[in-house]
Each structure stands twice: as C-alpha cells, then as structure tokens.
Amino acid sequence: MKKIIYLTLMIFTTIACENEPVGLPAYEDVEIVEKNSELSSYLERIATAEDPDEDSISCIKFNYPLVLYLFDSNQDYVSSNYISDGTAFSDFLNSIPANLQMGINYPLMTTDLDDNIIEIQNNQDLQESIENCVNEELIIACEEYLTGSGYDGEYDKCYWEITSFTNHEEFEGALLSLTKTGRLSFFHNNVKYDGSWIAHSDINEDNLYTNIFLQNNGELDFLNKDWEVLSGFNECCNFTITDGTDTIFMERNCIRDCMNFEIEVCIDNLQQPIEVSFKDYLPCIFSINSEEFLDPIQFNFYENEDWATTQTDSLSIESYTLISNPQTLYLNRKSFYTGTNIDDSEITIEGTTDCD
Image (cartoon, rainbow, N blue to C red; front, side, top):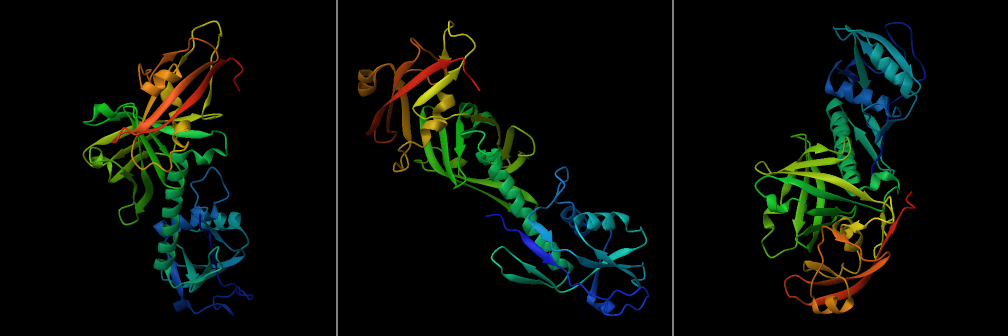
C-alpha cells in the first residue's frame, strides 16, 4: 500500500512584525534550509503535488496552515510567513530572495496512514523521510508500468516481449507476464516458466532494480538476479534492464477483452484469410489452472482433439491461418521436465470486424 505521510509544522498564534517575534521559537531551535538545496527542491515538489504537470511527490502532504521563517545570510531573523495551502507554499518558495533562506522549527510531528506519530528532529531526518517516500513512489510507478495496473481497467492483460538481449539472441520473442502480487511467467520455445519478481531500489546509489527468479533446472539460472532498470515507465511502451554485462530491451503489449479460451481476432475484411498469433494470447492462458503446477509447462496447439491427445502435428505458435470462422482448436499442456499430461482444452477463435 502506498504510504502517505502528513507533515505537520507547529503553528504559532502570534506573529510579530518586529525583529523580536512574540511566541515564535528561539533562533537556535530553527534549522536553515539552503536555497537550491536538494531538500528545498523536495519541499517545492511537495508543494506542487496537486499539479499533474509537475514531477511532484504525492505520497507526502503537509497539513496547512503552517508557518515558515526567513533569515538573512547572517542567519538573522527577517520574517515569519503564514502558509495557508500548497499554492501559497509554492509561491513562497519561488519568491524567496536570493539573499534569504528558509528556516523550519523542529521537531516536526508526522502521521502515517496507520495513525502512527513520527517525530522528525532535523533537516536530515526530513530529507531521509522524503527520500524514502520518493523511493516508494518510484517502485510503485515501476510496478504499475510493468503489470499494466495503472490503466484503470482499460486492458485485461499486459505483457512484455523481448526484442533484444545482448549475447542471447535465442531469447528474442520471449514473453514475460507480471502481476502486482509478484508472480512472473516467462514464455520461451513453447514453454512457460513460473517464478517471482520484485522491484526495489538503492537510495544511496539512486538506482532502481527488478529482481527475477524463475523455477527451472538450472538452464535459466543466469536470469535469476537483480537487473538494474535503465529506462522505462516514464513514457510508453519500452523497458530496458541490465546486469552490467547483458542488456535486455522489451516492448509492452496489452490485450483488451482477454477471454482466455475464447479469442476474438480483429480484422478488416471477413472475406480475407484470418491469421492469428497464439503467442499474442498466451498471457491470457497463463493464469488458467496453472497455479498448482510448479514445473515449467509446455504449450502446444492442435487442429483436432485426437492430435492434441497424441501430440501429433502441433501448430505454429507464431502464425496460423484459420480454416473456418469461428474455429475450435485444442491446447495441450504437459510438464516440461516429466512429460506428464496436465490437460487438453478447447479454444474458440473468431475473426470479427466489430472491434471497439
């Protein structure tokens, strides 16, 4: 769950106009925030959190109103400033003269969504709290991008196709399907490998990583590691990761109306041959009755049930031309390592011009 931290600054009811403010803290209780510092930049991003065009920090919000202070280069008090909302905060930060600096009185009391009260003692604590928040938002953005969960239900399923893999051309065309719960499906050479994944980051290095783990007999163990994220989830629809030696480039594809065993293929003309790539719909089929199987599963498609049972004349995963519309095909799934049959399923494929 995304944690939202509410920062509360102590407000004083009396603000004096003189250089000796009444009811305000002693100067030694205030820490200066250097203008153009990283902490100052963080605070400005928080102040503009409601602006969708800004690179804001939305998981931290201040409770308004609050009071901020200005000091000169000698750290002498100049003024106290009443801040009523985020817009006023942003305006205040942008209007601080070059020769003045903002000051914050500590401690600050923070409250998380579990109503836990956290006390921030100084600028360093405040910056660490914000960086932890930024780190969490980065991970959430990555998770939503990789799983397609940031589309508000527009698509039923999103998956990734490897378009380039340094030193491993044999993996070009392989598919990855990821879920928010941390499940990973990797499809290569008609075999689906199950596993897990997680996004995490190193605040000190300011790097984001995805960790991949696949259940296999060792032939794919070189994929089971931390991969540093080089680009992605800022603009659609690519994702690039590296282990420092090999680099993987992926493209995202999303399926609308993913109906598992009933596939609709959108075409322009029903009189023309209807071609279908089974690979494009495999992520829909991944989740069906496969959770209980820990071994990799081999997928093969057949034109009739007898051929599926005897595993004769399997069809190309990449491209198949329908011989009728609609047409029923048969999917056979078996354990890749033991050869044990899992099931045979009917799949209906229909070409249609009624596409949304």
